[in-house]
Amino acid sequence: MRRGTARALLLPLLAAVVLTGCSSGDKKATSGLPTVAGGYGSKPTFTFPGKTPPAALESKVLRKGTGKPVAKGDLLVADYLGQVWQGSVFDNSYDRKAPAGFVIGAGKVIAGWDDVLVGVNAGSRVLMTIPPAKGYGASGNEQAGIKGTDTLVFVVDVVASYGKAAVGDVKAVAQKASTPGVTVRGALGAAPTVAVAKGAKAPAKPAVTVLAKGTGAPVGAGLLVVQYVATRYNGAAAGSTFTDGVPAGVTVTDGASGTPFDLTRGVPLGSRVLLQLPAAQGQPGVAVVVDLVAQPKTAAAAG
Image: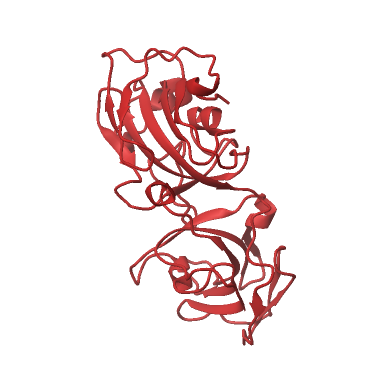
């Protein structure tokens, strides 16, 4: 989870929170860890050994996966549950039935997550206790009901991770598409250029155009991993995952008024699309070229 919120979205992105687990050579004592009921992919419950939590960061790999290790700076995709020691659950992804995506090892989440989860294999279940200094500090997180003195307990089921090399389908088939006022150039698998003609007007309502059609499953509701380049209708750059060096995890909803990425529902994974978004909140409209990289399963579905 992000340092400042219990649950957030990046465009909107989900945000959440290098020690290896005890079972794989952890040098830290783990006698103070709670016990966990439930296996990988299931919503966990904790039994605490006492009222006093460990003073230091502790972690344990409850199940070691065999997938790719998470690298520093990756987009980590995981299911998770967070609870205050001997207190309430303040957030979990299991009830939402969709994994979350976090940039890990780059100071984008609380320090305890960065310290523990870099290097963990996909398919692993990790338990950790996080003291305030490695969590939200003395200020806590009022929105989540976390006080500055609270120790946090997490179970994280690592599903997958995506680095800067994760791209759409380089063999996606170019489509005959008309995009008046917007010119898109560049090879599939690399950062495109998006130019908006001077005087071009943003659409009155959001629109999607498939520029190149992939062969993956159709996009549905849930977390979607994308690469994108965005340009405003005044010609100003509006962000790029290619520049950031890490894909984004965005939300696709079932509703008609969710996120701009709802427009991608039904488009095959691997495709490159153009999203044209109207002006909003005093800002010009935006033309966004999006490569649909992947739609990870929940930990329960991934097994």
